[in-house]
Length: 113
Image (cartoon, rainbow, N blue to C red; front, top):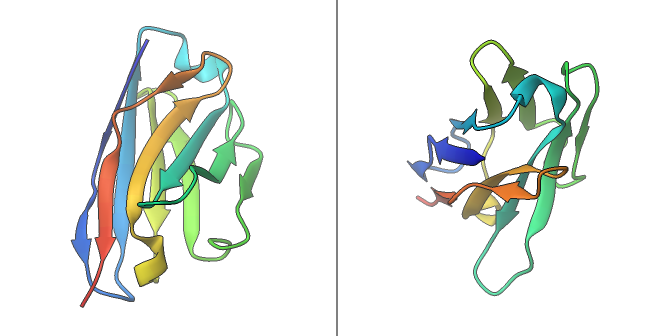
């Protein structure tokens, strides 16, 4: 099982990023997926959750209306669109398959002017 995140970077407040997580080694379409984030000195936080076919999504209150989780089962990829970014969104963002307890290596998002 392997999860590989990409798409992080440095962005100004109010900017946008699109994170991707490419999955391999398991039948991706059969599993719910999540994005977490962890800022320095803070606990890892669940950001968004998506069910197998993408019919149901859930978000942390802090990102509702700004972030969107989606998936493409044909590409074995889950995405996180980050809009209207704030400095408090700065963190390492991790992709997770909860049932398989699989984690990616993380991708750094830094929001700063």
